[in-house]
Amino acid sequence: MTRSLKNEVTVQVANYLVTKKGKAFSIVGSVPVTKGRRFRLVLIRPGTYRLSGRSCTDLRVRNWIKAVSIDEAIEEAERVLYGFRSEQPVLDFAISKVCTAWLDSRTCTKESIRCYRQFLGYFVDWLQGEGLTQFDQVRPEHLQRYAKNLANGGMTLKSIKHYCYPVRAVAKWASLNWIQVRDFSVGFRLPRVSQEIRFSEGQGRPFLALDLAADFLLWLREQPNGWRILPGVALQALCGLRVREALRLTWAKVDLDRRTIVVDGVVKNVHSVRRIPVPELVGAILSSTPRVAERVVSSYDQSHPYGKAVARALNLWRPGVGIEPKGLRRTIPSEAALRGWHRLALERFIGHSPVSITDRHYVGGSVSDMEALMRAEIVEKADELLMQPLDKWQQNGNLATGPKMPKSSESKVLQLPFCA
Image (cartoon, rainbow, N blue to C red; front, side, top):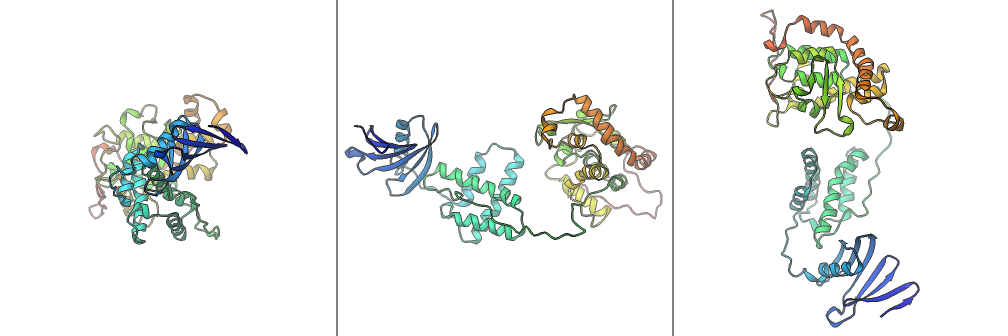
């Protein structure tokens, strides 16, 4: 049975009459067993249809289904709307349980899972403050109010987007897996934030200048447990390594003869994989560091956090310095920017993605050529600024012999804690 009216085509498919208009299909039951059934399918892309209709319990259903043809799409829609609704067990849609189920289904890194769990925890706590405990109680207005609350707290749009990303992902995932749940993130818009910023002399992130970073390294040398974090601090401040890059560096990746290190393995992106020359002071510190394990920084793990140990050391060295542990990485980029060092060499040295299309697609050269450029434009210039700290380091002997105590019996040594 086929008829055509105003570009509409109606055909019989199994037990249904299907009216096609453009990419939309209106389906109506045509036999006694399907009488009264009505639903709608829209072809989103080849193999994907959007279903909307009411189930056998008169529950409004919106879902996405996978099918290679309209016949298969109708069969799948029939199963979703009428086939298994009465057979499904009663599910516990507690907000925390749905979020946990989504986290268990992810295949990303442990760091990403940790961030997602933290951001979802903030949202769950906010919903509980609103008196909401079940996932199917959450509406689009709640997500909008949550985002507006973050904006009122002074958070930037970029941060709000990061905080809301796992929440929106959970909402979409739950709506695709359970027909009882609706995607409350549909139509979400980032809130407006105040763009008014006043000038002040204190603008800009704090960083340790090279001479101060060297003083911190020399101070750490004199502390009883300073050698435990000393190589990590040197790699961060003088080589621009990220915290996780410094913690994952193994002695097999260190070439003391050529004064180079290789950063690879589990890294942020492909541009983070690099071989870089290191300043002479870093080479001297690594030469003096005891090789007690496979990794260069081997004394810290989850039970003894490296970051907290560095934060305590910074506070003991100079209270109120205002530098967080990962902020040590800002030393080399800040010095290079203020002194006008070679930009491309700096980007490759610290493992950043190239900024311009020219750098990304047209700049050639081998690894050795780039290593020579980094040595000439970054490392040698840093060595010129670190000559005096290097002389002091070489005069104090070998770090591997153990912590050096002050000669005067009246001098006091600040005890650096082994862990946070």
